[in-house]
Image 1 (cartoon, rainbow, N blue to C red):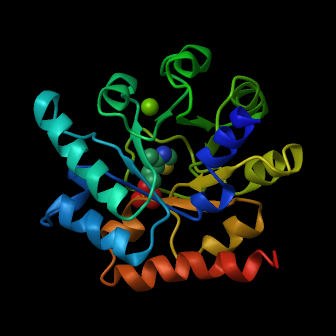
Image 2: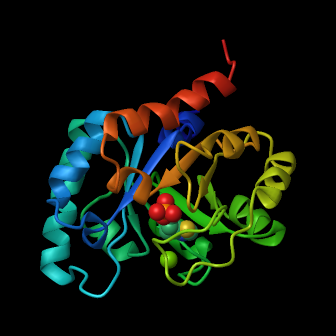
Length: 226
Ligand code: TZP
Ligand code: MG
């Protein structure tokens, strides 16, 4: 029972409501930690540090930055996830890691990540089945729409596979990603996503509080769970 309770507490579907992703390259002229704190104050429900691009932080600098992000997330009681870098996630005791299909096999990561969150990007039924089978805590599906934030992103998929995935797994935590904004979030949530994962919608927003509330508000309207 303890195991079940622990696993259950790891991640709830509602934690995916507004999944903010950021790295220093997404912050333009703003201080990344300041931007993250504003997003936390605005009500994001989970955060992923995704350090990519031409001049990413690496080594000790990345580690120190990640530690500061972790401390901020803890202050707001928001799960802190690290993209790709399993060793860094372990080293600084992040709440979890998010991996793609090109990263280490899920079975191996799961062994190292007992009691931590593992998210996996999936694009088709087979990848989805494997993610569920090998113990992912949630999957990310996308890109749904055209994105400017990932140069090597696949072609936008629309909501076709998202709907299929939801039909296959009625209760599995699913977050949608790629070009999502308050303008199109409703379609994504109606297609079965538990939440939206965004970079630019929050990083480039002139009013982060309003943006996060809009992204959340659709969910409150959509999920009549009372
Ligand atoms: N994976 C698929 S699309 C994407 C990632 C990391 C980028 C999402 O960024 P945006 O700005 O919300 O489109
Ligand atoms: Mg990856």
